[in-house]
Image (cartoon, rainbow, N blue to C red; front, side, top):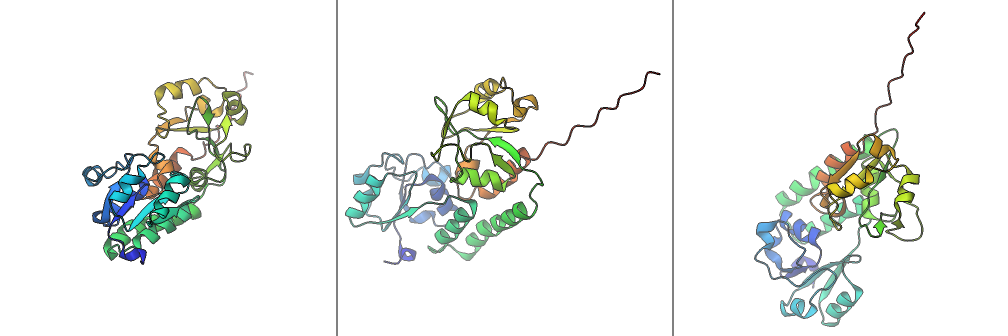
Length: 269
């Protein structure tokens, strides 16, 4: 079956569930995960099929979907294999850059989104991407963006979050740290990396003011200059309708600090 003809869709990816509603395709959703919480009024009444990592495969199969949308990183191989073994078409997505995510939104629109909904979502996103690329800063700001603590974990260079930070003018201080996509680091490592900005998303780990206060004790420029920011985690990790907003809100946080004014010594003679 051509995926464009899919009328019963189960989404195992929260940001893509939101994207389907933004593209006026929400009426085709017959099931979502417990973590699919946006838009609240759209997903509230939909059957839930467990989490992204612990999906209830039997519940998905019972919904008789024409298509299941999954993600290589968020969902397990076992879930995908069991669904395919049940004869269900599973679309495994895996965007690792902002441009790949934008292209994926176009592919979702190809499922049959009305022209008006497609243009309303994609045209402003394309404009935001062009502006970010052509109006980039002359110097990138060193940024630390953890996703977890105990142990502290950051983002490597082969991740969507890394690419979003780069697009917004940031230089990810742990881009080439070890061989993990999400490297483990210590606060001593953070101090040595000397980030100028620290972004603390509230998901997947719920970073908050207490974490910001702890990091503010480090001898790094971000602490010295008061550039430790608690942010909406969906801005850096949800590659759907929030991309445009992410670019607009994260770029100012990563703008280079203005150079310090030179101190003029006055003669006392």
